[in-house]
Length: 484
Image (cartoon, rainbow, N blue to C red; front, side, top):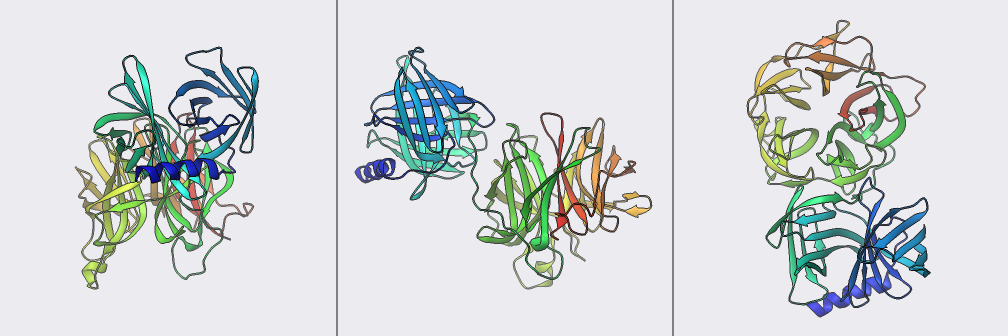
């Protein structure tokens, strides 16, 4: 088994090359040495490991990107430097004063877990998901402290967003199992945490254009974005369509600055009419499209209208619209369920969060105000909860501006109050409302965003604003329009 895996690994290393220009990945130079290069998200820093052809010797390099390539220095001998220009999948320049050239063999394509991890014994693990001509493969570079120095090993195997299982390319007796849980993980039972992230790759390509189906749904909707520099009062459109056949977004920024945009899509890669997520490491300028993994949801039919909150103890909770499998009237009745996740990708089914025995309930927006969870649904119900799991109806939400009712969609904090954003299809606008208790709402003057015929990418109205305050103080809005 080990010989076959090692032969397969070196066949991949020597037989396939990618056409990606990103630095992160595996490179081979003209002297048949391998270079593992990793550039963390949002940084100019580049980490490098030079490996001999037989993987028995290694040296560590550190540096940064330049305007057209990179510059690295050897950590043990800082006088040894690599300066190279990046062009397509080629590097060319000088190494310790001599000519250098290298070619990228694998580009880092990235799972949500890819990055540099540190274990409690002082070791480091560089986790990468790589693209090759045969698909994707997981690689882990392991640096383990021993007698005042680091021993290195390279493991190759299967990587998912939950775990990595691999064998050493240096010693057939060694294996590595990693269990991932958000920012934490265990490496052969030794706990660790992530220090730096690498970029995430898309699981699928978003669709273009609409599907003609009668009724209300994501098939003829699209996601767009706008930004505010005054705290969420006035917005300027980005002029970019993020995805067609997409509806009801919800935004969330995790503790490491990664942006998640959950939404319901009609065509979601190989799936249809389900929730998915877009992930961004540059605050919404570029996105990777990812499937969501459901665990223990065998009895629940439909998985739409995501409404996601961060939990105080870590992780996330999603409220979503669905119904039970079955043909009875009770099973088919639509209600709000919830599921929990440690990483925004894997969702373990909880229970029913809110329902009405006499009618359908759908499309919630939920927030913790004070010590009480407040949920508002499309039908107008206002429900509350002390634990965020089971909600009871308190009444009907009364949210109006200029005498017209608005549908609440999402919220931001505004000093000691909450600013909720709502839409009115007939008015074709998005407005905001202030509340301090989740019960009484006061409409703010003016509109936050209004449909205008001059914007050719928007159909007859705009709706469903999702908001997130970014670390630079600006506010990102995702919103929905009809595909013209």
